[in-house]
Length: 396
Image (cartoon, rainbow, N blue to C red; front, top):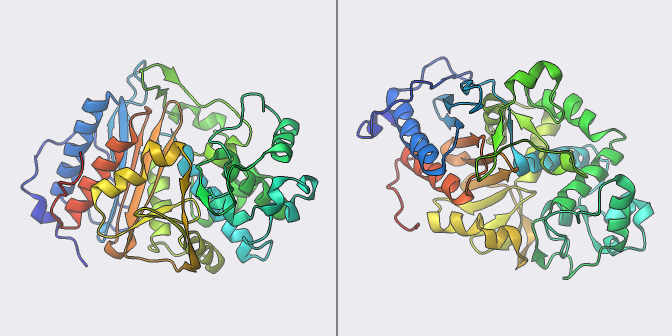
């Protein structure tokens, strides 16, 4: 289906003077109405949430585009560009899941394997009953969102896993957890006989042709690293933590992340085993309300009501245990779905969403931690408009 972008001409014509636009997929420049739509939504989002700078990536059937607004630092007033590096928080988990899926494709393990079959030093712990799939779907049975403050090194981390006690049977409840995905990354690196950071840099990034994506920002790129801001507006950047790289440590640009999303949509040619890995991360394993939990990614039947997106991305789902229904056998990857993932650090906010069937996708990166609901509403408005559907009035 071709999107008729010219039908968007009725939208406000306020264009941000600092917009940067690229279309590396196709030579054609984005039509002005697309820029108007993105500028309208982005400027409102920034004003309502006091966001210093924003970058928006858009994927349409016609191409891939990037727009930037505001500044990378309030102190220097350096403008946002397509080369600006953002912390993407838990969107990083999709990279970890993809590397794990690639390891499975390569025969390093099966996702149904128990954690302790790969980490025998944890045998005799509750992880004897937890599979790698449970780690990837937040269904371990009750791991917390964060490690306790007392866990600050590798030895303390392993002791934590040895003594961890589930609050529910694995596979019966979803509790969003950094220790869960972090452990998946740890197991994957061990199975691939490498260091996680190096495996990402030397294996995954080249496969997806990501040229400015890092777990450790090199000195030469420090000038491109945006300053982050807390919800109260104080400057901050991510500090190191146990398994931070595996769970929330990626820094990247709007160009690279939009390209990565396009690859997840099947619009970028990948080596066969990486394409298989992407497909595995999109299978459906558990159901929670209108949301289907895949490997880290979350998906909804399309078209999706805004109220369902807001419910699935709510604090109720992110911070509390929720009973889930297992999908057996697991659902095959689908194209008629809205797939999304949020990501936050103390100073940055990210949101990614795409609809493969419509060849539509969006990436929103901000150098401030601001409410997730605002990100979801903005993305839903843009993609729904581009799809030619009337805006939903079922949200707040």
